Length: 241
Ligand code: MN
Image 1: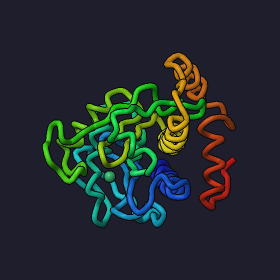
Image 2: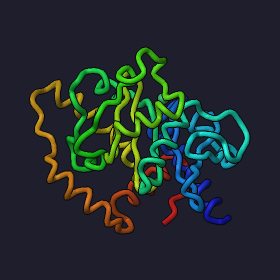
Image 3: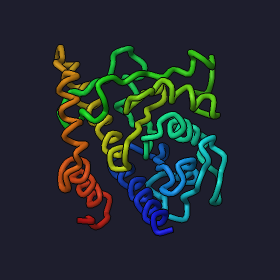
Image 4: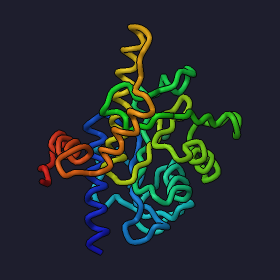
């Protein structure tokens, strides 16, 4: 029970951080896999992330049906369930419409890591286009079939863009997923600037692998942890170390 309570508290903080860093605005959401039941995940009821409190957190089965909690769920909860279903190692998922990322979902020019701290977003970032398998839609991931199609496009990667809509990132921990979501937006801002100036030399796949291997060692006070402490303060929470 205490696992669940601390997971909910961390998830509330993650929502506030994503709002403070402007990855989420009125829209966007973050979930975590249930700490005691891998067949469920935790996600707020449909609400702007900046407003979310512990009482808003609901529990869902991987097919998107509600298992516990009250309120109107997010329509796009299927994004989360489908990724947890396909990727047993994924512990957290962030979906957002952060603005600098969206151009890369529509121009056929890939978003790729341009700066060392952005390596976490992954060497290859596909674009999921609902037009391919579903024709004209409202672009939202409105059922589990669309969720599974998006999860398939993500495959084993960290990030996937969604045409004319936004992006989704998956992490092995909540801190990693929040970090990747923030850095996806940062990388997009930098890449837009750099490409306006000329041809870009991106990080190589080998460089990306080395940076990620170092981050995944998870030394306290480094990498995801150090960023988390900074973002805690930025979002108005006391640091926890
Ligand atoms: Mn969306």
